[in-house]
Every structure is written in structure tokens, then in C-alpha cells.
Amino acid sequence: MTEYSQLNGYNVPGYNLTVSGELEIRTEDLSGETSGTARVDKGVKPKKLNVSTNIRCEDAKQLRELIRVIEARGEHGEGKVYNITNREANAAGIKQVRVSDRFSWKPIAGLQAWAVTFTLREYLSVPEKAEKREKKPEPVAQKSEGAAIEPKKEATPVQTAEATQEPLTLLENILHKIDKALA
Image (tube, rainbow, N blue to C red; front, side, top):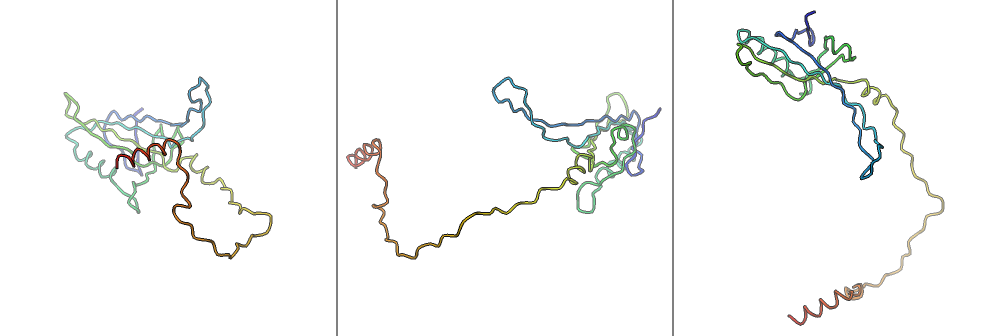
């Protein structure tokens, strides 16, 4: 069976096309310096598809066209969202993707062809959709029991800097005397 991949109906060109997937589940160690196994869940990140294909040098036009597809931008300048048709993507439940990270091509030693690789990241993953549907708790206004206290309108005496100066510690006292002696 020949592997194929389509992005919005565009057939990814080349031969030896392979698509592999990744799913990152982030956790953080809570054990500190102990040997405990406690971890906190930091969420399921969008799935990634790593795509590699080979394009013959005589088909340079296909490479240029693929680069244009990869460079395409959406309405607001972000990477374009593509509907994907691919066996691995379908098996993982991935329906839409964006180009992520990098796109590279390099000559294949001994062949008149380029090895092309790029990464597609899932757009609006199932965990992301579920997170958006969750209702955020409404902030609750804090209430205080009792009556408000009115400030007194008496004149407060002006304090000088010397009156508010805190007493020196023993060390500060010794250093102050040494400083005066040296001056």
C-alpha cells in the first residue's frame, strides 16, 4: 500500500513518504530531594506528526510548490490550518494541523534527490476543545462582617528624622564609632 498525505487536498509530493506521530503528556516531579514518585499532571499537549519524503532533483518544481504550501499564512498572519488526510493522522484522531517548528531539505548522498522533513502540529486538539468547554468558576466578591471605621480627623504631629530613627544594633554602633574616628 502506497503512503499518501494530503493537506487541504494538496498531495505531499515525493517517494518514500513516512509519517510518524508523537503525543506529549507533561508531568512534573513533586518528590523534591526524596525518592517519592509523586507527580503533577501538566496536561496533554497537541499531537505532532513528523513527515519525511524524498523529492527527485528533476522534480524541483514540486519542492518549490511544497515550500509555498508550508509558508502559507492564515488571515491573521499565523500559520495556515490544513485539513489532513493521512492514515497515521486518522488513526490518532487528528483532523487539522499547522506546520510547526521547521521545514528542511538536504541532498541525499549518491542520489539526485532531496530528503525533505517537516513537522505538523495538531490544531484544536481534543484536550484543548474540552478545556475551552469547561466553565471557569465565577469570581466571588469578598464580604466583610462589621461596620466601617471612620478615620479620626485630628492633626498628627510632624516627626523629625531623628525621632523616627531606629536604635542601632551593637555591630552598627561599633562601626559608626570607627567611621567617626577615621573621619
